[in-house]
Structure formats: structure tokens, C-alpha cells
Amino acid sequence: MEKLAIKGGAKLQGEVTVSGSKNSSVAILPAALMANSEVSIENLPEISDIATLSELINYLGARVEINSSHSLTIHTDNLFQWHAPYDLVKKLRASYYLLGSLLTRFGKAAVPLPGGCILGPRPIDQHIKGFTALGARVKLEHGLVKMEAEELKGAEIYLDVVTVGATINIMLAAVKAKGKTIIENAAKEPEIVDLANFLNAMGAEVIGAGTDVIKIYGVKELKSVEHMIIPDRIEAGTYIMAAASTDGNVLVKDVIPKHLEAVIAKLKEIEVDLEVGEDWILIKGCASPRSANIKTFPYPGFPTDLQALIMPILTKAVGSSIITENVFEGRFKHVDEIKRMGANIRLEGRSAIIEGGCGLMGAPVKATDLRAGAALIIAALIAEGETVISGIDHIDRGYQKIEEKLNNLGAGINRICLEEV
Image (cartoon, rainbow, N blue to C red; front, side, top):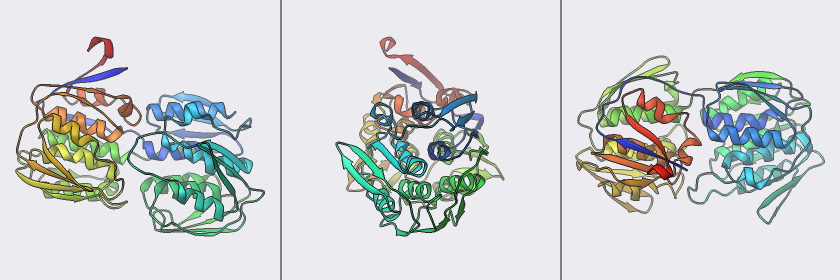
């Protein structure tokens, strides 16, 4: 049990390098279990979610060989277990990708309903719809999803809502299914493209990833491969928001700017001074941010994962700003914590109305989920005095050494044990 103690007031200065994508990694590691031999994955973020997934994979009988802090090899020869344990699955929501990969590998799977951040209702009905269409028999018993299929067959599947999780799980279940699978109204996130590239390198035939129609032609086997994870666009956005909020000057390196086009456009509207290069974004400052209205949407819209993180800079903007959350209805749990720091924010349904222009003050606050925790760090950086954040296990799930990276930019962050507080 640890906390972060943060002294506010510093303008961030310097350079920061973005780690590999968390959301790509947690899909690609389960996908690796479908290969007929070893799979090497590089540019993995050094986060607790990857450690948990590695432990899960070892439990299932595959062997995870750590090559470095950012690279590992998964040996799948001795994979024998198709039943995932609850004590590990409960730690991360992405464990449900084991459903698709184990179903493909064994023709059956049993995975408890997943844990992870609590962001309101996130049903897996679209996952089940896809598995059923491919020929699996699905049962939900005592919090456990059980599936069996003698043979998976390609199907046309229309997703009722755009969902990253269901799109990925259906892709995993379809790559070795007999015939052609078509996923319509598919999610278009860059992480889905990264997964498709990984699957194709293994010998799959996935066409159309990054569009709303994905076609998958089933193959008989998936081979050994080496793969490099794409940069984490949400981590990049986090450091961009932190630099802009502190009126800093920060070069964010190893980023794919195209993945952040909606964010860059909104920051320019707020009057953040920035420059965009081929694989970098330079934040030059934002002395007087303007108020703005923001609506989250699936990619390529403004990402739900960054709506909490843009809120601190809007507390500095004179006038009213409105953030409307259209993806996860339970994603405003950070609001009460930022209000403890002096922010003037009220909630109306799916919208948060921020009356800016009032300074934040340091206070004890609690991270309720991964991105809420990052938002509180940014709020603490611009607050007067010291802020102590608890619940930082959420933050460690998705950010590699976040306090070290921010301290290298001039932040004053200390990680302290609970008994020291």
C-alpha cells in the first residue's frame, strides 16, 4: 500500500519518452497463446497489468521468458489449461481476451467475469453474440463464462454498439474458424490495427482493421513471430496534458501523432502552443487556457481515456467548459476528488460543467480508476501546496514509472509507504 505525495507549482520542462501501448499489449499477449510455437513481443510497458497477464499465461501452462523489462517470449508448446483462475482474472478487465484465444486453441474456455477499473456498466453481451455466431455454446454460471465448440465457423456479425473488447475477442475467435468472418460496426482503434498486424504476421488473414468492417479468413495454424508494440497514445496524451496544464515546455517522443489528432485539435482550441513532428509532439506552453466543450467518442473521436486528464487545465480557463462522456457513463468518479481540491464542477447526467478560473489547493484525494488517478496527478501538479493521492495501484496498472518520468521533467513527486503518511 503506497501513496504519491505531490508538491504543486512546477512548470514541467524537458523530454519524455512514451512506452509501449498498454491496450495493445493486453490483447496481444492472450493472442500469442494461439501460436504453434514461441512468440516474442517487444516494447511492452513495465506495468502491473503485464505482470498479471504473464502470471496468468504461466498458470495456463505456457512459459513466459523475460528477455528484458520491455521484452518477453511466450513458449506455447506446453499450454494445457483452458480454465483461468479468478484470483488473477479479477485484477484486470483485459483478461476476458483469454475467452477468444483459449476457445481458438482448445475449442473450449472457462474464464471468470473480469475485474479492472469500474467505469459503469460494461456488459460482455456483444462478445457472447460474436462467439455464438461463430458456433460456440456459451453458459454463464456463478460469475464464470464457459464456452465450447466442436468447430468454429465464419459468420457475419453486426455489433450493436462500437466496442473495442468485443471486436478484439471476435477477431481472436475467428482467425482459425472455417471460412470467412465479417465484423460490421467494428471498433477502429489503433490497438485493433496493431493486433491485426500481429495476427497477420503469425499467418492469419485479417483485412480492414482500422475501418468499421473487418474481414477474417480462417487459417489452419498460426506460426512463431516477433512483434513490436505500438506507442501508447493515452500515455502520450497524459504527458501532453501535464505539460500544457503546468504551462510547461516538454518534448513528448516516440509517439504517433495521427493517433491523437482529435486531442491535438482540442488542445489548439484551448490555445495550447504545440508543434507536431513525425514521431514527436512539442508542448511550448499554455499561459491562459480558454474554456471549451468536449465530447468523447470511440476512435477517432476524443478518447474517453483522456477526458479526466483534460479537466485540470479547464479548471484554469476562465468561463464555463462542458465535458460530455458518451462512452462510459461511470467515468466521472474523479470529479468529487478534484472538487476536494477547490474545483467548481457540477454533474448533469453524462456531462460535467466546469466553472474555471479558480485555483486548486492541495488535498488528500483517492484514485478510483487508472485514468482518474492520472488526472489527479495533473491536478496536483497545478495545485497550490501538497496533494497526497491514495489508491495508486490503479495508476500502476497502466503507467510505467510515472512519477520517475514526471520528476525528470521537474515535478516534485514522492512515492511513500502507507505507514509513512
